[in-house]
Image (cartoon, rainbow, N blue to C red; front, top):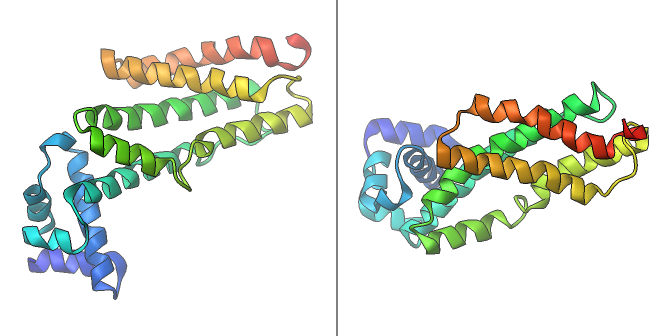
Length: 214
């Protein structure tokens, strides 16, 4: 390993060289995933970018796919963390503005993660492993639905929303987010174009669930 890489690895996790190097390999693989299609990334590419010999990878990972799954999950974790950070709380602002913020966060999450999933279509075994991993704690489907569910339930208790099927409402928020994400992937629509559609979607949803039927 080059002195520069060795210094970076030592600073990554502290005094545990084995853990530090493992994390450095995942960091390197994650960086490559942001630059290239997963199917084009080889063990040698990762090793060279990490500044280690090819065989070092197999001291920490049974196979290249195991390392790539770890890197893919790390990328997904970052997207999910951004999704549920600083979301509006019940009782603040207006329900419409808050739901627009939740819907926008969902669209951002989909547009961040969908290209990665699409890129894995040519690697079915890797795609299966990735999906399996992100359905485990703490990244299961509840991580995406629970913040919206809790928000809607709290607004019901405050009387700012009427009685409605919360699970159905979540689907009506997440469904368009997934649809817009697919549209962006297929058509190349810009983030601004996607954002422009969200208020209309939320207003249409609210005409069915807003307190008093307003």
